Structure formats: structure tokens, C-alpha cells
Image (cartoon, rainbow, N blue to C red; front, side, top):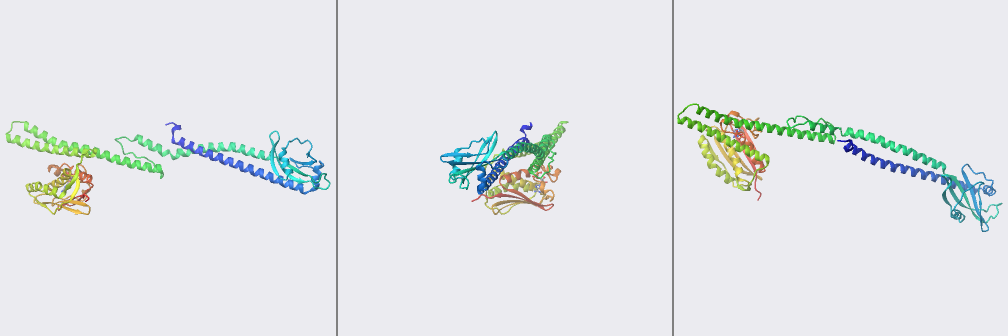
Length: 464
Ligand code: ADP
């Protein structure tokens, strides 16, 4: 990534633009404020000087006589009428032209200021005030006149030029320092981004154990922590996936090995037909188990891919349980267990009847499988608030408390060997939980080793 396209660069450019605008506005403000106050103070001093001159008649007289000694850089002039002619009394060698309007305004009684260019580039600030030449000793004492007092603006102009020169150096310098500082600070602040990018590049599908090493408490630190959590979740998901694949192959290999061994053994020599029948029965049973396992694997794969077709409609749970009971009773009798259909109600839920049947049947299957004769398997249905609760209870082997959190995981079995011999695949409860959750419900387990287990399925009731 080129520097020009980096956030660091864009961030610095924007920051410099804002700073440049601010500094320019500030400099202009300082310039105008200083220039206004310098001119104002010069105007005030011109006013004071004009008052001083006007209040002392001998001074006026000396101006009139051309004997007045001006201060350094000062100009004092008199204008008045003799008859209809305007007479100008100005220091010898003075060569400036004033506008008539400026003079007449003062003669007519109104003071005013003006600025003119006296010599090349040098300004002259002038104040014209009205005077009455009612001074004894002055001729034409009744005539109104104008006193002009002026001072060079050279010092003010020099001060202002000095300010402009200083600002012209200071502002770009400040911007250059700010640019350097900006790039440095932005680089420091965005350093974790490089670290995040580097770690992300290093992470491969097979090695998700890496984590981003950013421990700041700012936004980037939070981002790194969130990404680390995400990588952690991905790692777990990949591990589950790996475990699932290895478990699935293992599960499929077991019945295949039995089929292979059984057929090899049967084919080794001529045998009586009863032996062949026995072998074929074993092979058929293993094939059925494999087919049921593959069926369940497909169910879970469809669930994972979100490609299941649900056929939701009103399902009367009471009726569904009563229907199942007949078959379950037979299965229980075959195993020497007693079956009890406890109280049921006509509770209606919104669901997929076939999948709900599968859910209840799986749990009943497990209850029968893990209950030795002479035990009891029972089922009940009750309403609790807005939920219907189907409870399947057995007096079987029970589940140790420390195993309960894992029994809904795929391929998890409490007693690995016993479960396989019983025909279990380790996928039944994972499918049950999936079906319950897809209906907005859940499954709870209460169990005690040697006493029995109760699996309760909570499903939201159809709102009236
Ligand atoms: P399986 O097909 O092996 O029964 P499940 O997913 O249905 O797989 O159950 C997972 C494990 O939970 C079983 O292997 C078994 O150890 C335990 N289990 C399930 N139901 C019961 C029950 N009613 N009584 C005792 N243990 C049970």
C-alpha cells in the first residue's frame, strides 16, 4: 500500500488543511486587530495634537507666520479664505495635494481623517479640524478656516510589515512541524492496524491458534479483542468440524469392519446354510445401523447448511403422544419393560409433526435402550405457562452429573462401548436438541446414576 493511499496520509492532510485554515484566519485576525489599534492610537494622538495647537493662539500665530517648529515626522497646515480665495499656509518645501472636499469639510465645521500617499510607498495620516481664526493679531480674524495635522504612517506600516513577515515564516513552519508530528502520531496510533493485518496474513485455515497482540484500551484494542474472539470461535468451529469428520469415519468404519470380517469368515469354507443365515443377519443388522447413521448424518448436514424443509402447522401433542404410545408399548414389552402413558392434555403447538414425532421417538428409544429390565418408561404432557412440556422418564442407568453438559454433542456417548452395542449412534440427542430449538423450544435433563433420567422437551404453545 502506497503512503498516499494510507489513512495516515489522508488523516494528516485533513488535519493540516484544518490547521492551515485556522492559522490563516487567526493571522488575518491578528493583523487587522493590530492595524486597527495602531491607526486608532495614531488618530487619537492627531486629535490631541490638533487640540493642543488650537488651544494656544500664539502657536496658531506662529504657523500663520511660517515660524512654527513641527515635531519630527509631523506636518501642520492652515487653510482659510481671504475674500473668496482659499489661502494655504504649509511648511516650506511641502509638496502634497489634498482633496478640496477634505479641506472644505473642516472649514464647514466637520473634522475628518484621511490617508494619502506622500512619497513613494509612504503613507501620511491627516486630520482636518475647523478653526476660527479669531486670534488677536491674525488678519481676517472672522473667517473660518481649517487646521490640518498629519503624521507619517511609516512606523505603523513597518510594524505591520514586520508582522506579515513573521507570520509568513511562522505559519508554514508551524504547518511543517504539525505535518511531521501528525504523521508520527497517526503512525503510532495506527500501528495496531499493521499488527492486525500481519496476524491476519499469518493465520491459515489449519492454524487458528494465533491471536492479535494488541493490548491497548482504545477502539483498535477493542477491534483486536473482537477479532481475537472471532478467531477463537472459528478455531473451535474448525476443531468441531475435524472432530466430527474423524468421529463420522470412525463410526462408519466399525460396521464396515464387521461386515468385512463376517463375510470373509463365511466365505473361507463351505458351511451349513444356518451359518450363512447367521452371517447374513449380522451383515444386515450392521448395514441397517450404517444406513441409520448415514441418515442421521445427512439430517445434521442439512441442518448445518440451513437447507431443511420444515412443514409447520398446528400439531396436537396429546394426540401425537397417544399415537406413539402403541408402538412404544410393544417395544417395551419386547425388552421386558413396563410402559406408562401418564396424564396428557390436548395441547396444540405450531410445528412440523414428522420432526416432533422423531424428537419424541428418539427420546423414548433412548429411554428403552438405557433402561434394563424390569424397569419402567413413562411419558407425560403438561402445560406450563405458554409452554407445553413433554417429559420422558425412565428408571434406567442414569447419566453422571459431569457428563450431562456433553450428551447433546455430536457423537458423545457416556459409555462408548455399551452404546454402540445397543445400536446407538451418538447423534440422537444432537438431532433432538436441533428439532426442539428449531421450534423455539429446549430440552432439559434430570438424571441420577442407577435411578433413572427424565428428559423434558419445552415447546411454545400455539397462541390462541
Ligand atoms: P446414542 O445414539 O448413543 O444413544 P444419543 O445422542 O441419543 O446417542 O445419546 C447420547 C448419550 O447420552 C448416550 O450415548 C447415552 O450415554 C446418554 N443417554 C441418552 N439418553 C439416556 C437415557 N435415557 N438414560 C441414560 N443415558 C442416556
